Amino acid sequence: MIAQDPISDLPTHQVANQVPPLIDYNLFETNPGLREAIRREGAGWAEDAARAFGAAIGTADAIVLGEAADRHPPELHSYDRFGQRIDFVEYHPSYHALMARGLEAGIHSLPASGQPGAFVAHAVLEYMLTQVEPGVCCPITMTGASLAVLRHNEPLYKEWAPRILANAYDPASRPVAAKRGATIGMAMTEKQGGSDVRANTTRAVPLGGEHYELTGHKWFCSAPMSDGFLTLAQAPGGLTCFFTPRWRPDGRRNPILIQRLKDKLGNRSNASAEIEYVGALAWRVGDEGRGVATIMAMVNQTRLDAALVCAGMMRQCAVQAVHHAAHRKAFGRLLIEQPLMQPVLADLVLEAEAATTLVMRVARAFDGASPEETAFARIGAAIAKFWVTKRLPNHSYEALECLGGNGFVEDGPLARFYREAPVNAIWEGSGNVNALDVLRALARERAVEEALRTELEAARGHDGAYDRFVAQIGDALRDLATAEGRARRLVEDLALGLQASLLLRHGPAAVAEAFVAGRLGGGMRGCYGALPAGLNLELILERVPGGGP
Image (tube, rainbow, N blue to C red; front, side, top):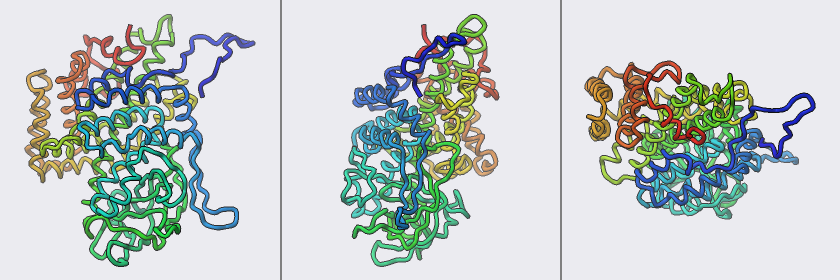
C-alpha cells in the first residue's frame, strides 16, 4: 500500500530515516541494459512502445494493482446459490486490470506478427510487466505460445487465432464466439506422473474425425478460467495433444470440473487448479502418439518466458535494494556508501544484467529465420530456463536482506518476489528435466552444438579467464556419453559462458570485467557480495536508479 501524505510527526516520536516508495518512474527508460538490448537484438522499432509501457507500468496506480492482486487471491465457486454447478473462479479487479494492460499492449500477440524482432519486443514488455505482478504473466505467456501448437490443426487455428491474437481482454465466462478476445491455459500433469507426462492416464475416446471425448484428471491446470486448454491424453495411438474449450460449439458448458484451487507459496494472483474431464469434448492437435512432440512447440517458448520473467524480477529486486540503500542511513552514512554494502548491491545488479542480456539474446534467436538461429533458440531457451530460474531465489533473498526487517514484511514488494521466486524453476520442467533436455539436444542435433560453440567462440580473445573457461566447456562437450550425472554442472557452465560471452561483446567494460572475475575467475562463492577487490563498483551501480551520482 502506498500512503498518501503520511504524517511523520507522531505523538511519541518523529518518523525519520525512512525510504520513500519507488513509484512513478519509467521501467524502460531507467534500465540502460534493456534499452541497449532492444536495439541490439533487432527490436529498435518497438522502443517508443516499450518506453510508453515502462512509464505506464511504473506508476503508483499500477504498483498498487500488483500489490492488491497478490493480496486478494482468486476464489472458486463450484455451485451457484441454487445448487447448480458453475465452476467459476472469481478474481480480484486488480488482476483483471493488469491482464488488460498486458494483453492490450500486445505482449501475447507480438511474436506472431512476423515483424523482425517481434519476439524481442514481446520479451521486453513482459520483462517489465512481471516487475509489477508476476502472476499475470503466466496466462499471457500461455495464450501467445498456444498458437505454435494450434497450427498443427489448421481449421482450429483459423477459428481461434483471431481472438487469441486480439489485443483485448475479455474475462467474461461465455462461449468464445461472443467474446472480444480469448485466453488459453494448459492442463498437462497428473498426480502419478508429474513431469513424466507419458505416465498420464486421462483417456481420449475417438468420436470421429478430430473430435474426442476426454475422461480423467489433471493435477495442475494453469489459469482455469481460460477459454480453452491444451492438454495431453492417451488416445488409441498413444499420448496425444488435444485442445479442450470451456464451452462446446452449441453453447453448452464443456464438462471440465474444477475440484479445488491450489494454495500456493507464491504466484497467488494466478489460479492453479485440480480439474477433472468428465466426457469433455476435445479436438486432436497433431497426430496420435505425438503429443509430447506437438506440445514442445509451445513449451520451448514458455520456457524462455519463464526465464525472462525471472530476469525481470531480478532487475526489480536489485532496483529495490539499491533504492533503499541510496536513502537509508546507518552508522552515520548512507548504506550505499558503506564499503561492505557496495559489493553486495553491485553483485545483485551484475546478476540481473547478465540474466537480462541472456534472455534477450535467446529471444532474438526465436525471431531468426536461419537454421543457426533456430538451433540456438532450441538450446538457449533450455539453458536460460535452467539457470536464470535457479538464480532468482537466492538473488531475491539477498535483495530482501538489504532492506533488513522491512524487507521481510509483506508491506513491501520483496517478500512477494521471494515467495514468487521458486515457481518458474518448477513450471515447464524442473531443473533436472531441463538439464537432461540440454544433453539430449547436444547429443542428437549437431546444429545445436555448433550454434552453441559459435556463440561461445565469438568472445574468444577478450579475456584470458574466459578463454580458459570456454576451453573447459569444450572438454566437457566431448564427453557427453557419460554426462548425465553431471548434467547440472555442464548446463551451469554453459549458462555462465553464454552470459560472459554476451557481456564481453556487448556490455559495459566494468560489468563484463566484474562478471568474469566474480563468476569465472575463481568460481562463484556461496553468497552475493564476495567480488574480487579492484573492480569499479560505482559504474555497475549506475545501471540502476539511485545508484549513480
